[in-house]
Length: 147
Image (cartoon, rainbow, N blue to C red; front, side):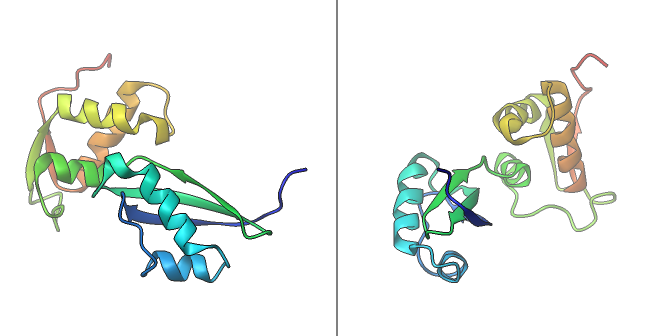
């Protein structure tokens, strides 16, 4: 028999660095979830991505058990890592803070493809380029895709 789902929690936690302090502790504690058990499992599963911010979706059940899915880092975070910037531009339409190539866009799109709602690498690259544009990061060259 299937367990009764009590709800879901969405958090962004650094890989390998989950601990009972906020935001993890209060979010899980208020739902009656074993905080230390989650921290141990999360840290073990994200050891190879230590230091990167990872979105996690925690599904908790009526019997206080839980499951969680770790997603890939957000595109904005990956763009900041590639360009070595601290943050995006305050005025992205006027002030550009960095430049990236279409090859860099493609590597980010291939990494993020499993979490995006698109079917081709070209459309994923356009989504990543749109995020870059909204952060004040310009993309060098012409789009290498079909159209």
